Length: 321
Image (cartoon, rainbow, N blue to C red; front, side, top):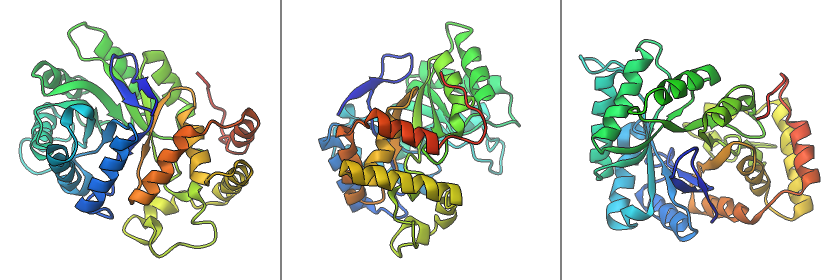
């Protein structure tokens, strides 16, 4: 698998990332082990998790696997601090105390002494940004974190945070951001992607398959064994619109012409968009993961890419980097 620099940093990651949002929910420990082995064998290195996934269970599963299945130094381990508000003096969202406590909990569950990429899950308007970002500085200077990123920040928030960190040489620069990005959701192109390009951040695109809708499996009904029929039904329903149906039809037509699954078309489109370092694969099963990994060999012909660009164009004007 091809590897890319993550933002303006020396960290190299696989151009497809393995997400773990379903681990401990739709994917049990054995299924997670199969996925991790399959991903590693394909040359994948970037594994993305979060402390909020199943209240830490996904991190716990991943920590066990990195202890017994895959060498820790062959994986770029990324996790996210969700800055949840809880009772008590250190339950203050993205406060310094809350974030550093969350980091220590993640390290314990992941059974490691450092995180390769530690990400702030969301902007917290109740805490001064300087305090939130100071937690990143402490985390890196104490050796618990190697690189820092953010997730789900608006364009102006991203620019403000990146500028603050690069304003002083002792602060930890941001190297990446996570944002939803697919043929069904191109809102990142308005402000987020231009901001990442200007400030030298790599984009990790979550939900690159439009929360599963771009595979075409929800075109006529909801399969009983799908995510759309389970606890995450509302997550999938978000993209089941008339506009989405037109885009899905275009993806299916392109896939038929290329003789490849629609997931390959959707993933290749995101993977090679300007500013994107890696789509984050949120597959529930090893079979789904293998299908997604096979997309690494596909490069969309210019005519097909142009047609997909046209039909998925956002309603509002976008700014291309």
